[in-house]
Image (cartoon, rainbow, N blue to C red; front, top):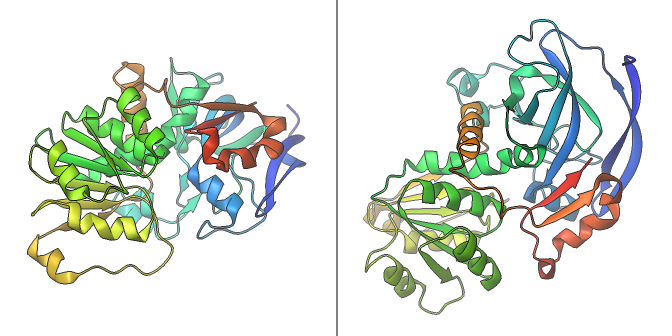
Length: 345
């Protein structure tokens, strides 16, 4: 392949405006790099927020795309654990500096982290060149399944943060993709699991496809009583909020059991306050969960390969790469029932 090639890409020029463009790629590899063909791209909440103009820490124009199923086309010197033809998921959290968090193994929240497709141009293009250390291969998974691994890893990491066990009673608030991922790993823990949302169709989806133990409508006038019915008179020992909504986040302090844990997965772009006497009275553990770790990717791939984790219900919409600019806005319409849209190249 020539070192300098032109390829198709899609760029978000400004809020509400995706455009097909041609961009160059220098395929000359540095030691430790690989050249990749992008086959599948997952559309995530970050992409949707960026399209709306509501994504924090974001600048325009930007090539989106960080949920990727890719194929290795070429490998650079010093790459020994991957080969041409390998199918991989991409870990999109890049740390150029070995800052304190990174030195402690917290690569998900480095001080100078750059998220592919968010802080720098991402994978919504035909080819990309990346350091091999950010790739996680599978011998058996499809490109579509590999493109789901990053989304799944956010929920996986949140469950790890909460250190859940089968004795826990878990409430996940928000039945979007991140909430669904969190639910799947909560179920794998063998704990009793309920989901809360304002959308009854999403709740029904969770009951049918994820086999959750209980559904709670967020607009019920007796949410606490509904929770106690699900959990045999008790309240949840772990509450994971994937909404990024400050009112929902504040309500978690009422929902959680005494001595319980709250994990905020969704991000609210603003100041957040809570009633400190209740926080202390319940001796609540409050945590944030951001991104995921490389080992999370490997564990999830193994779970999918073994059939423990089913990705089948996830993908509700598929769109050809060239049609994405015209189709993207439809993903924002709740009436279209989008759980996860996948772009096909």
